[in-house]
Image (cartoon, rainbow, N blue to C red; front, side, top):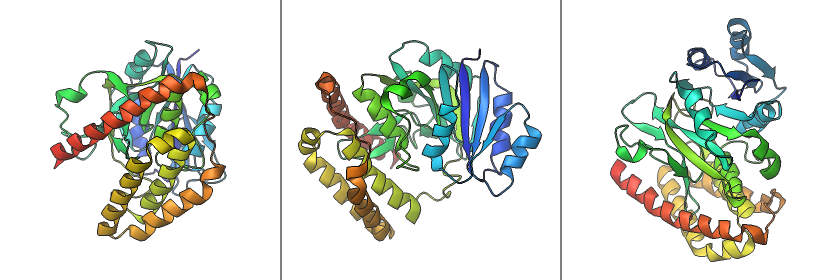
Length: 326
């Protein structure tokens, strides 16, 4: 039996899917399966996969389920101990799958391991080294825009959550904490599932020897911001807080969360996206009570305390990285 199933959600990925699948063909291990979940592509990329990559299992969805829905379809079809989620707009180094598999095998308490994502266009810059979440309610790509030679990102370590664009997960843990939240559709869904794992006492880690080169936003638009991204991200930020923070915890963080939203609103107003941001916040508040909340348990209280300390620390890390980039 293979150890790992690589799950790739694909939607109109005709410009990227060949390079992604070719890089998997060139891995230095064959101890994995490849499953593509096609989200009703209209550009013929599903036909390319079917015709040119017979070793790949292709499952066609009747509609676009988004990232969350697509990867859930892959996870529920996975029979291996580990599931490796991969964006269709990445190219993998030959040791990528092996490195992530070896990293997650080091401890049964590891839920996920995030890869070292490098900017495809500017290969001297990092794109993501595991994700951060801050006390301001901001999710962020750890290491984004930093030099690939920066020693801070060349050692394995714990991170708040893995970036699901290139990360491996322990399949059995999903039955305990739940799958990716389809209410998210896309954006922050990986921080959400990583947050849940932390509440239940699992670890998320970063493995720098597992390298991919990432185009970024291939499906939703290559520009850094657009109305869709701003609205969905703002909405999902509300979901993220209400799902994972018990009432007392939200009360403790009420001021920094309010401050974080006020600063974001001001930022997006300056870019001309205030209306999209406000709409996302409204949607989040309107639907927050119907989100799939993580039930509070006293046995997780110490985990909440550890998470709170990390949220505070991550805020300083976020601003330090911002200053280095600028």
